[in-house]
Image 1 (tube, helix red, strand yellow):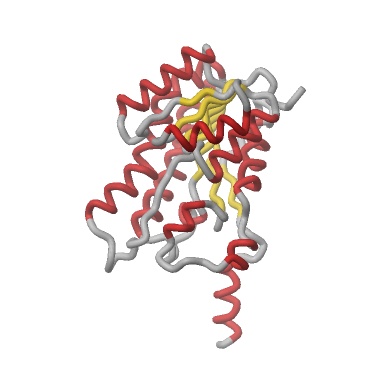
Image 2 (cartoon, rainbow, N blue to C red):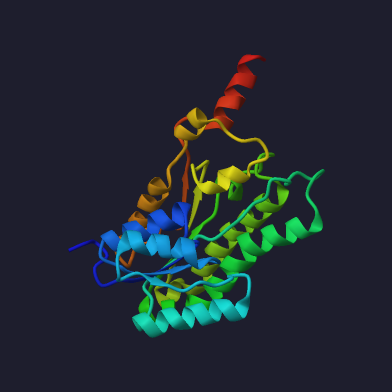
Length: 251
C-alpha cells in the first residue's frame, strides 16, 4: 500500500514536465489523481501512464468559470480533495524589457499568477473541510531576481510565493497547509521556449521533473502538524552560481 493510499489529488499542468511526473508518482503511491491542463491530448497521455483510475478534466485555468467547472467535476468524482498540486505555468521567448509586448505580459501574468490564484480560491473551502494540502510550483525566479527568466515571469513567480504564504497566514487555523516549491532549472519542455536553445549536455545536468515530484511527495506525506512552507532546490551544477564564481575569479 502506497504512502498516499486513499488520498484524492488534483494536479494542474499535468500534460507534461513536472505536472506529469508528479501525477504519475502520486498515483504510484496510491492516490486517486485528476489531471487538468488546457489540452486534452497531453492529459490523456499522462492518464495512460497511470491507468484507468486517472481522470482527465481539461480547462483554461485563467478563466474563473472553467476553473470552477473543473473543480466541481473533480469533487463530483472524488467527493472531496486532500491534495492540490498547482503547477500550470508559462513563459515566452521574447521576455526581456526591450522585447516583451503587452500581450505577452498579460499571458505570462495570467498563466503564472492569476491561474494559481483562481485554483487556490476555488479549492480552499474543500481543503478546509479535509484539512488538506496545496502545493504551488513556482521557480527559483520566485525567490531571486535574474535576467534570464524575464521581468514578467519573475514578478509573477514572486507573487506566487507570496500567495502561498498568505494561505498559511489565513488558513493554518483550519488545518490547511500550503507549500511553494521553487526549483532552479528543470529539464522540461518549457526550456524549448528559451530565446537561445540549450545544448543537450547542459540540460543533462539540470533537475529532472521527477526530482521536483519527489519534493512534492515529501510535502504531501508529512504528518498533519507539520507544514513545509517553502522548498528551494537547484541543480548541483547551478549555472547562476558557476557564472558568479567565474566572474569573481576574473576579478
